[in-house]
Length: 152
Length: 107
Length: 129
Image (tube, rainbow over all chains, first blue to last red; front, side, top):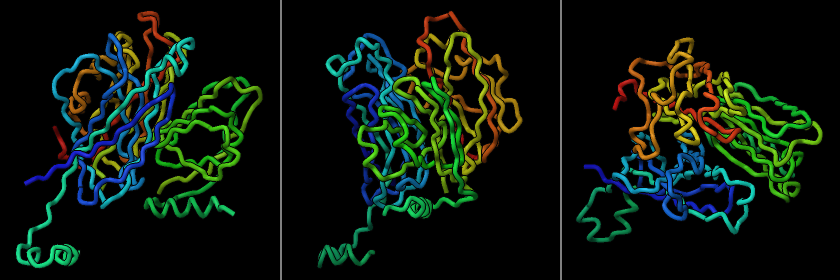
């Protein structure tokens, strides 16, 4: 049986052309990333869809390999539940996910001020598999910490 | 003193990258240049003279995007770029500039 | 074993009607190009835009191949926005030669703009949707 944990990386963009650096440690127990999805979640108000508001790059396992480059867009309407992009990325215990988000919205020069630019948020969702540790009833009943330590 | 070469070797070791060749890569951009891009796949380019770039320059690659900050001269670290690398200056260059990288060709 | 990578190729279009040739190489840690996605700053620019592509000497798309046949709108789920290649296309450091052509004058686009071509690279040849 699969055990799934959704790991979320939240980014906040506060000024035009901003580079938001990503450096987040994934939980120790996740061992495989099987899905990826990123979305604008809050802040932008527009009467039409925007195919591109920014660019995203993600590396896994503490920069062992660059895996994902993506364009982030804005949807004015909420459509169907989005499907995750299927990936298969082995994860090493507790390593960093790194990368950047670059805001690429085309802002007219007259609008290009912090007063006009509306800060917004982007969320990255990583669907990760993890293995539940086997339950050792006798050991854990006696001393939980000792039983956990004994496995490693 | 911070040793760039040692740092690079450590980075490559930590990231399990085997090196086929390490050398300098110089890119000269003419006066008037506002934007330049080039391709560097299957290699890493560590920018060694970021302080020569105007404040506000955006260097954008597949793994990293960086805007040159005002206090760049007080920073010691060097950073790597790969893939499609673009350099966007805030204004056209008044004079030509040579940007220098340590190029790591991956094995 | 590294199984997936989404390799990005950016192409700068400076003027209306410009046709830009580019040559890059695929990441050599991945064996196969599984799929492609092309992203433009505005979906109205898809009309008349074309992309030719040759990978490892093998013609994948003719220079007149319309981008609108390779991409989709923003509302499409991430898992469905890639165009999947039916044939096996070798990656592994292959040379990718392409030509992107802006249609010019059809839509009042803002120049310059960047086209992003995403190659979905995999290692497992059995990996099909």
